[in-house]
Amino acid sequence: MKFAIAQLNPTIGDLAHNAQQVLDAARQADRLEAQVLVTTELMLCGYPPRDLLLQPSFIQAMADQLDALAAELPPHLAVLVGYAAANPKARYHGEKPLFNSTALLQGGKVQQVFHKQLLPTYDVFDEHRYFAPGQGPSSFTIPLGDWGLRVGVTICEDLWNDEEFWGGRSYPRNPIADLADDHVDVVINLSASPYSLNKAQLRASMLAHSATRFRCPILYANQVGANDDLIFDGTSMAFNRQGDLVARLPSYQAGLAVVEYDPIQRDLCPGDIAPLPADENEAIWSALVLGVRDYTHKCGFSKAVIGLSGGIDSALVAAIAAAALGPANVLGILMPSPYSSDHSVTDALALAQTLGIAHQTLAIGPLMADYDQVLDPLFAGTSSGIAEENIQSRIRGNLLMAVSNKFGHLLLSTGNKSEMAVGYCTLYGDMNGGLAVIADVPKTRVYALCEWLNRQVSSGTGPVAPVTLGELSAQVGHLTDALIPQNILEKPPSAELKPGQVDQDSLPPYDVLDDILDRLVQRHESVAEMVAAGHDAAVVDKVLRLVSRAEFKRRQTPPVLKVTDRAFGLGWRMPIANRWKSEVKQLATEPAEQLLEA
Ligand SMILES: Nc1ncnc2c1ncn2[C@@H]1O[C@H](COP(=O)(O)OP(=O)(O)OC[C@H]2O[C@@H]([n+]3cccc(C(=O)O)c3)[C@H](O)[C@@H]2O)[C@@H](O)[C@H]1O
Ligand SMILES: Nc1ncnc2c1ncn2[C@@H]1O[C@H](COP(=O)(O)OP(=O)(O)OP(=O)(O)O)[C@@H](O)[C@H]1O
Ligand SMILES: NC(=O)CC[C@H](N)C(=O)O
Image 1 (tube, rainbow, N blue to C red):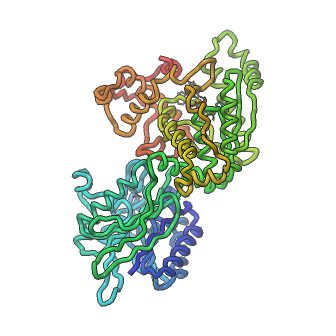
Image 2 (image 1 turned 60 degrees about the vertical axis):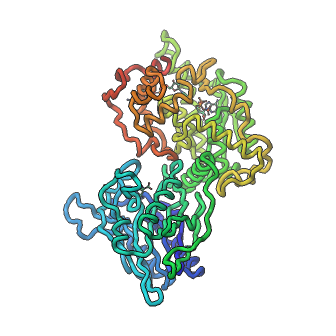
């Protein structure tokens, strides 16, 4: 008796293409003599479909696609497919018209339908907006010799609510416990669980716990690929009833695994276990490469443009883009101003050369002079300040968008999470772009990732992950000792908007800033807790005020690829016109310029 797990990469709304992926996987599973194929949550429409779910024509098209798929599948194979099913009982306003469902397709038609019971509505999830909860327990039976194997079906969050695992902090219901009470032999879970740092390890310990606690094998199929800001790592797994890992699919790529069930032992047999990324840097790098590749291609682009400043943020984004799209599809634009250092140009050129990407230099001095001249009647008699400095950034943003418009390149923006948090970036300037590639990566991690990249290349360790450095190395071919030129790693970070400017004139050292931000954004700590951890109260106060003051900018940031537990975007929904002072001593009404320089 064999189960197949299909780890697939659906595109939101591309029903025919997603169904074709299921069909291809089913044919492969059939050739491998599997009896059951498990796909991922909402596979037919892709996860998360968001407000497409509010369009009745979309739901009808999905139902039609499901019937068409059922008719084409190998007839003996039982195929579990995630889709959104109409809720026939929904009659009054406010009752949700849909279920988040799994169809069991076999013999050319839909045999059974199971509904998700626990609907996540936190962080980036908003499932109560669309779905009614199902009432379990949900199972089906596969004839096996003279008995029937009872298979319990759950959908993603259904498995995330074991009160023992979370130390009592969960809802009263646990669908896995209900299935165990119902004496199922195996539990299946169809998931769309987005990547964040170390989440694969969390999922594994949670699954191992449930398998052990209920003495029940678990097969877990997770979506792979990126849809908008969310990156899905896949890393599908299977655990036996002792809680041992018996199979794992590779992270960050589509694939199919077959796991055998032994009816005598009533347990899963050991199968192939793909390695996890070797460390945190490899995991984040691989996630970002997948995020850029899928966003770019799924939005219909093949090429990207990036402003290359000779700094570390644009260097990392350019390396990610080169790995994701191929160096031939990345264009770096150097735009020196009279305030730019020589090394901003030489370092950017060295980077373009090691990455093998095309580059072009557009000097912005004459445009700055034109702006000064045009604004002179209005600005005469005022002292030069932030308005004039930001014009440089806006000229660059404008030129980059002109290149994007002219040649159809996607503009990748380069701001990191630390500067996005405190508003150390210019609206309609360096914030321009279609995708904010590293806006969930703190500056200290930007350095760590670049150092890791250089170590990988210089140690000649070769491919580190299937979609990542290996491909980049293969494409670049001539990598020597460093991918990111050493000077980019060593020089002090600077916006170079005025002579001699460095980030640390305005901001606390990045290790201090990032620790405070982590405590604020991820861990919801109070000022008192941060001070107790050793931070200076005045520094904490300044950072909190900057964060509060910059909300209007973050709301206008391009979609941010999420790699932490809490990214700016859907998981961070703060009001802009906001007078809540928390423990911040005073409302942040000072201009950002004064705050940054305080
Ligand atoms: N609540 C609100 N809702 C909507 N809009 C609001 C707003 N409050 C201010 N604004 C608008 O925002 C403007 C201020 O924001 P903005 O124009 O971005 O300018 P601002 O934040 O004043 O200055 C940008 C800062 O980013 C730094 N920086 C660091 C690194 C790189 C770069 C770079 O550009 O390369 C820049 C730069 O040194 C400076 O300190 C106001 O003049 C106002 O128009
Ligand atoms: N001289 C320049 N040429 C091209 N692009 C630039 C230049 N200066 C700034 N940019 C663009 O604006 C972004 C923000 O730049 P800036 O150097 O001011 O800040 P940063 O946070 O230190 O980033 P980086 O580390 O990439 O320099 C850069 O990442 C780059 O995309
Ligand atoms: N799609 C879901 O139900 C996802 C929720 C789940 N807790 C996760 O992050 O993986």
